[in-house]
Amino acid sequence: MTIRRLRLGLNIDHVATVRNARGGAHPDPLRAALLAKSAGVDSITAHLREDRRHIRDADVAQLMNDVGLPLNLEMAPTAEMVGIATKHAPHAVCLVPENREEITTEGGLEVAGLQDRLGPMVRQLMSAGCRVSLFIEADIAQLKAAAALGVPVVELHTGRYCEAKGASRSLELERIRSSAKEAALLGLECHAGHGLAFDNVKPIAAIPEIVELNIGHFLIGEAVFIGLKEAISEMRRLMDEAMAVS
Image (cartoon, rainbow, N blue to C red; front, side, top):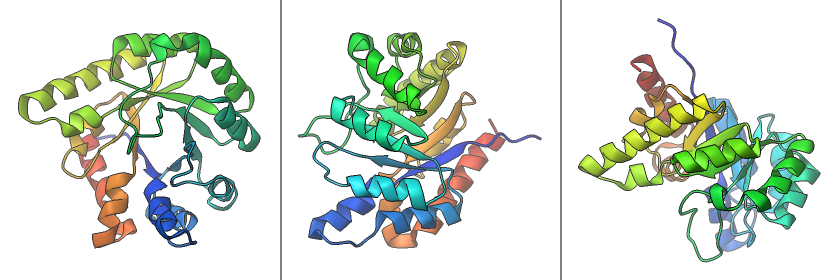
């Protein structure tokens, strides 16, 4: 049996959150990224927010220069962030919605209503050599809008699936499945992330059209109890098991 390999990206934002709580240098997000690399992750994700609440500009440069893995830079679609991304030209840029009051990203980008604003930014980022993705809800209208903008990748927001219970979770899972299929039909590479954990990742990992999961908060939290390498290894095992039977 041929088993497809689902890529795993680690979001290291909350290593930086702990560091910034005391304003010093520890724990170091770069060290976490290097540990993650040794544990077998395929890429590193970092969200450079407007208020720099976790990842800082200097972190971006270090992650680009010293890790040796593709960097997926999450950022809001603003002129400031586009300028930073074109300066560093990371492997990938994921455009996400952002507001200063939110604790974490609360949903997908409203691409269908922002095409005129997003279009020039997408073209500028792609001209700089960045692989642009859009973090969106599992919604056909958003997928079609993303395809119209010419981006190669979308990342489906899995937060509602992770928070739902019982029949509601089944409905959310089916919505993600249908959207992943539609993404493939539109020629979009499909990623997924937000809220994924040991107890809910398998159904998402089993969706054949999804080729990458980006997971952060849960793995960084679990690392407190079992270690970062061990947390990554267990997530990798669960993903592989799901793919073997999909």
